[in-house]
Length: 285
Image (tube, rainbow, N blue to C red; front, top):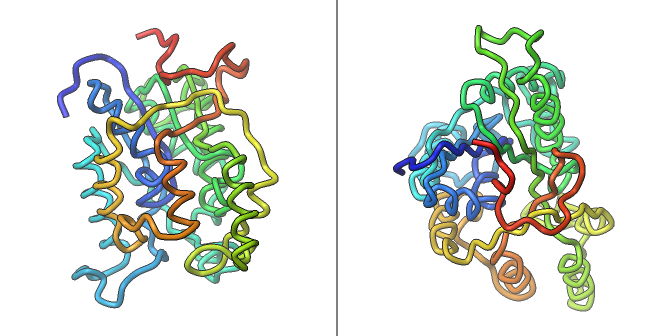
């Protein structure tokens, strides 16, 4: 994409597909407004779902990296960078114990790698997961904590990182969503005899535990103008179910929540007086 202003947006996520399924519309929207859009991905999704033929790739990581490259082209991302950690899998997975797993790294190590990218890219706005990582994935939570620490670390002149000068972004947002739709969906699922405590392909997502959490919505981004772009980018992540909206209650719920992407503003700490419609509101170029 052609950059037409000095604005830069950075997303820090854990696995290929996080950038698209959660915030793909926001990144596509800003890319088309001439904003530099960058993604930092902690892992290559080494233990994600995978078809037997790996779509012609040698490894799961290679396949998922190719899927992210496909999505990045469609969204219009300026760059995609990897932190070099390994996918830890869900809680209780044997992959949690891998020495290169994200969850095996210290918060400071994760933060330093993220802070390096912040200093290099120099974004005014940074996006990452909410405090429970969206659905309690341990890698998501580790990346959330690392990004929060890196936001301050990057601007600290006493911290030396590869000779890069300190740089302090202006705003930090957590991607999240209002729980009202989820709570309504849970009631419908129970009426249909489905157990919301064992959701997802592997039955390892507890929707009930997510419904009791609630984060304030400080920014509401209408992505209807780029919904087709997000859908096309999602289809790139075919191994993770991208491109399949689903049917029944799951498909209905998905359609209700895909017209907008919503965020909690963590920094500045004082919440805005009204819901923001632009993540760059109040930014000094």
